[in-house]
Figure 1 (spheres, one colour):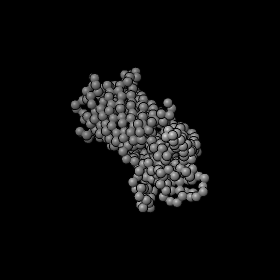
Figure 2 (cartoon, chains in turn green, blue; figure 1 turned 120 degrees about the vertical axis):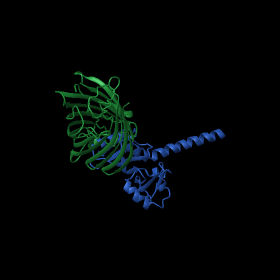
Figure 3 (spheres, rainbow over the protein chains, first blue to last red; figure 1 turned 90 degrees about the horizontal axis):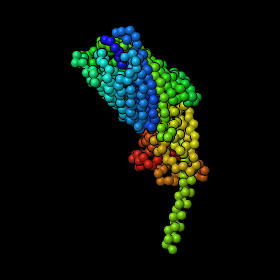
Length: 271
Length: 165
């Protein structure tokens, strides 16, 4: 259990409903059409099996093709060999297929798929294609917004492949899993808006779990977060992830996220 | 002689077209958007609307998500443009009230669901089609306009309007 990990790097959400802009889960809503979201996520997780911290750097770009479809590309960088190394990348697409809105509320459903590649060593039972395993994931997301509160939940199937070229997926651990998430977000400030320049503050709690399908080994984490939105365009998140229960081997389950996000609205006009 | 006639007709029809253009226009649109409560969401709509070259100014009430759009003279925008823009931002229109010259609604794309006023210099109307009102309201309206034959067909290029003044 030497070396480190790349895991727990995650998605940060890229959309425009701030209460839904969860730190590691993605809502059913999309990036606005024609707009580009640029995200830089950093995480620092404490090593369980050795001393020190595992640092990850994950830049991402998201693009809204139209009102229902978005794409995202990510790169995974970590300090596993004491210097920063790019270990892989990921492509993601999400399709919003159902939407019912009313004044100050909405309910949305979306389907997504992700493919990731990674060349790092495999050293834990947890499957994480964001920065750890090569593999794919496909799932469904439901998101409900009621006034200042957003609730979002997802379920997905995730399968790990060999981390080519050097690290085939071990035969003795399950290579596919079911993931589930439940997230809550609330707009705390301002109570009343006056203009776009006002800083918004959101509080969030996210629950993230996984069960390895073959053997039933599971974990469940909780993640409280605080989020600031500046000028209705830039976003800053701080989050802490803590394992609640786990029956699987994980190399660094607990740690911090720090996330910076900026939206370039309506690219065509800026040309 | 024939040539002259054709030329005359062309010029006359062009003059007519241009005069119709300048008379048939929307000067202001007020949109209430649905499905959002945060300022970043609202800004997405704001930026979409401002990307229209015909737009002079957009004023936003962030607490009600109401966008008041002032438009350039001589524009030929139809209500559909606003719907597309709001939906591109990821949201929907809850109500759209348009201020326009009375000639605007003489275009055959507009279908009145109530009586039009006489002798006004400006009219205000609400678009009551699907996609321009909330889903709940659309259900209600479908009942009240069930004798308006075109209403239920949801043709995207004609607009059922209710005169407000």
